[in-house]
Length: 432
Image 1: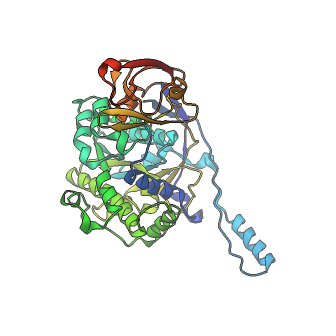
Image 2: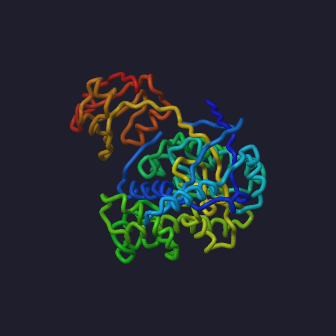
Image 3: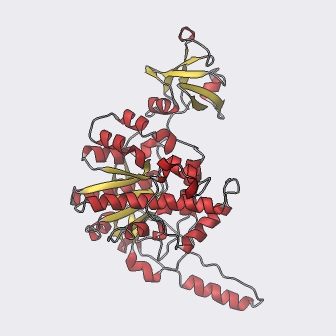
């Protein structure tokens, strides 16, 4: 199934002198929340669609400046408000560049970073089209991604080389445990890379390293995790630290101190930057398209400046519009104005599933649960979906990856973990 999207327009550096800097919290909140998500081992998963960019889109942003009023001179305050509004930037959309024109202008760049809100389908469509445009210019291209962790690079390579299947790759990279966002969001990019033999570089630090650093300092790391640490850290970006602290303060349930949180976040950034810089250093004829959460790219604080510290390149950063994302003269080199799009929902049985050894156990039910309405109970063990045997949550997600609401599946199950193979039962469930 092919989906299309309205063609985005791009705000770029020609407008920067007109723009007033605003404070970003949203994109960093996504990055920090995902860091918390990774160390606590939380969740989501899911089929592929290709896209083309067409027609024209507009997107409206607000850029407000807070004015402090400590006195009683309301006339002065009103005058300040008026000046603030009169100085707001105005963009004539038909005079902005298209995405294709923008990529043409930065065609010689060795490093292009494109941010994402992980759950926004249109963000991934923009990433895909940028990938296609860059590949058309030169096939000497690699894709660096946040979605896979460095220790699993060999399995990603094996899939791209056609040595293993997509299902095997997702199992071996532990995708549904370590990233867990709907795989359908990323599948078109990965399939395009496989079809055109474009390397994908796993940039992310391992969950084990991130988790350990969230609980203790560098000295307490096991030897095998110390070997995974980036070779150097830059702690000097105090504006970034301030933004991260504000996010930390919004997560009172975080068990560690801010220093633990900061150490983990910078390890994430430094690891991705070091992996990308090393690859580029080893392959001087290749350029890299880096796809990562906007919080790792905005203001250059996360990945871009840390790549520049390691290798002599000038990265270009592209962010895609989001409700929380301000127009600012420092947030990125380009801002793509894209209307929000979501993937079609996938079919659900409405059960909370957990892997216990080689058993997939029902631990609870969601509201409007098809599984519960069909008579399944907590503690039952799902062992098959249609003709596919399942032993884990990853098995189950792969088995229903392309299923839609309204489609039926046959579930094979056991009453409990002690039941034997002769006790297998089955039931047909309509996904919701």
